[in-house]
Image (cartoon, rainbow, N blue to C red):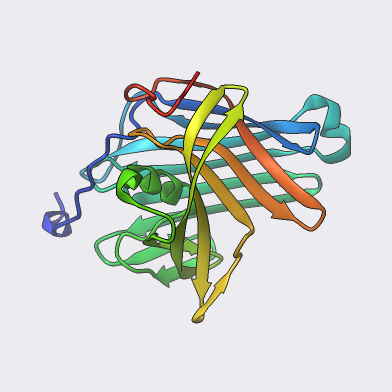
Length: 245
């Protein structure tokens, strides 16, 4: 055991997700299904140092019928501390058309450093990658939050750490292939250099219950929006009370 392992780390109550959870989505533009996306949590913990972690993955695959136009095979992987819900390691493999990118970051949550394939960077305590932030947000009890309330966290990407503010926009009932759900609508907004960026570019509909699963994700683009809608789920930590039918 390293001496630094004795330093205190935070504890976050998590009733939202656990081992073996799998969420599947159709991704498309208007009436065109362009691909599928999957969030999955490994069935067993992975150990980093002395800490046990959730092995969380996000995969995006274009449909075979569209591969000849623009083939997508993206994978993100993050090892998230089970007790503190913060990342120890992040990996990104991007294959989109003729573009490719491989990136990894190991987070030293004691020394507040991110050691990446592009260098070593200072980071704030319990900084998140893009996937771990998604799962941390699910641990926040939003049943007590109302329109206009915010959740604050910090995110590392593109060699920098940014303040990430999650705005509560209200509540809606949403119908997708997986069913009809009561949802909390939230908007992630990145703050950089004192200014807010990406406002209105991304909306999340999270089930309004203890699981807070992403039911729908909408990303704005110049010609409309790309939406991911839940088509199936398995391995949930408990009942999905937000589903109406």
